[in-house]
Image 1 (cartoon, rainbow, N blue to C red):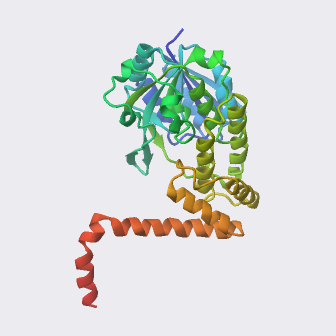
Image 2 (image 1 turned 90 degrees about the horizontal axis):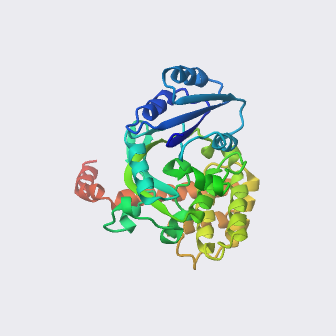
Image 3 (image 1 turned 30 degrees about the vertical axis):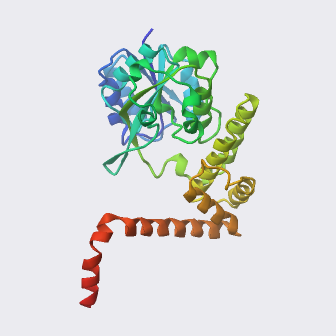
Length: 349
């Protein structure tokens, strides 16, 4: 028995796989196993995995035909030996003390799952992502001696990052509740997140940025061909909320979730079917009485409703985004400070 089992699905990840694996084997907390599942990669990922498997006996490589990340994670869940489970993405990396801090927190709190914070990385630039800023909600707390439930973080259940790599899970908590990722091509993280957060009796939190998420514009999430899967995802979450008696409690949060995702994915879709479904969904939502939906999302949603075609909607949303950027620039200190200089330059022409 090991303490932490790391589940690492790998699909065409050769560019960043070494950095990911190095961050795992270089953890200061050593009592781990790393289950690497090569999901039918067509690049050199399997060769890299075999190379690392030979040098570290904590690494086990499983090679399979492509099944998708949901089925791959579910398969790995049946193979883990650890007391705790951590899901990793193959193009990301961890702080070297991530497992040490997560393990200390989850064991001292005897929690079902422990949440961390993340840094986004794009083009070598890093920025702290404001997901699960729970240290701002729980003031002056010793998080190694503090647990909570979904009722204390209700706004984060449906409207925050859903990724499983944000949490360390107690293995028997996942097993006893038979949690699994739904078999959909994309967005399977979201139902898993909602289910595991809602059922947890004790949730804990490490208020540190320990995970480095690499933003990838070519990822499945940003694929227009998969945007329609959002409605399958929405149906799964709505069904779970209703079947388990949570829907009335989360009706506003669920509506906010739908609006935000529709507005976001409208920028990626080329599906007229998606547009029709979006309008039908948005028409059923009372924007004025839903305080959880940000004004910018309400404004975009109403733009979509006013358009007759998908192309009109996409252009309207793009124009809205451009106008917001201009407004932000005009309200910035630098723009206001340089106003006299711009007037002087203009007068010289």
